[in-house]
Amino acid sequence: MEISKPFFVVLIIRFIYAGYFLLTKVAFSVGMNTYVFVFYRQAAATVVLAPIALFFQWRTAPPLSFPIFIRIFLLSLCGITTSLDIFGVALTYTTASLAAATSNSLPVITFFLAVLFRMEKVKLRTSPGIMKVSGVALCLAGAATIALYRGPFFKLLLHHHLIKSHHQQLEGHAIPSTQTWIKGVLLMLLSNITWALWLVLQGRVLKSYPSKFLLIALQCFLSTIQSFLVAVAFVRDPDDWKLGWDVKLLSIAYCGIVVSGIAFYLQSWVIEKKGPVYLAMTTPLILIFTTAASTLLFGEIISLGSVVGALLLVGGLYYVLWGKTKEEEREKAICAAIIDAEKANGGSKEDTTT
View 1 (spheres, rainbow, N blue to C red):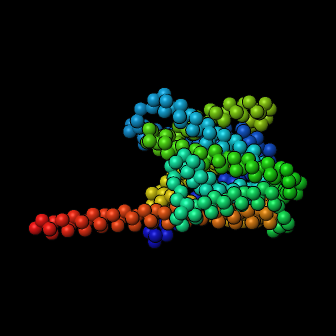
View 2 (cartoon, helix red, strand yellow):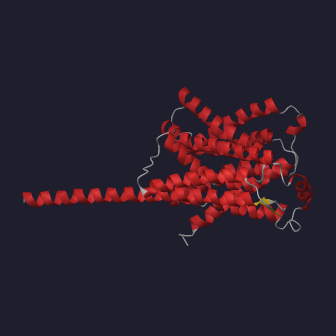
View 3 (cartoon, rainbow, N blue to C red):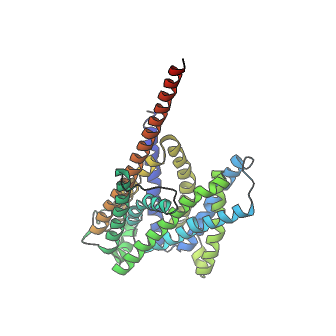
């Protein structure tokens, strides 16, 4: 039973992220302003994470110098505030299923940026290197397919979905224009690029400030301030800031507490038990869960181009992860061979001396 625990935890994580895409899309569909939503979401995450981080890591945390603070401030501005604001706008142009589909490009984009920053190496003359490059190419092909090719539309379960109040709203906006769709896809990819940049640069910041939980809480706090300033600059209607006991408040609470709180802890646990590759390989589950729920609950219309592009994105993801795994196996085998050779040489020297 111990072996299956990480798998069940991964299923919970992917369900959480599927719910994140769905609830966020619903909140925007009923009139929630995207910039205000990001501010409330980050404020909720700060309220949840800050007390926990201070309780567990305040005494052991290293001193926070001004240069490190500036790095953390810029990191939260790039990877959290900017990424979430762009994602919110992109989601209003597209669908929850598309957001889940493009999430498969995140590990590939992260790898590509790591190569640019010389944190990863690509050996083109080896099969793992070829797999990695092929994965990046498939990812680009998938993104281009989703953006430029739409094809026929599939209305699966359109007359049998469960939330009929949302159905009437979808009827008028079910098929966005080609220009709107392309704009949404490009913004979604831009959001993933800024998020991937955050993942890559966070490794460097952690070297100077290794308290992980406190670092995340501090970034959430700084992002709350940043997203508030962005929202104030773009949103002038006081009614857009009002919250009631509706899906808007539910979505904010879900993103702040469940996604930023519970999912963060569960991801750390899975990485500790099975490693980051295992967690990354389950990313396509988000697409499966989100598409199924969107079709069943909201009767979401899916295009052939989205299906083909999503398959290419998933293929690109697995090619990169496959190449990465094979490369690690080769390095371990080479290290083991070197150690065995040194032991053999050491043993032969002792035999000659005796």
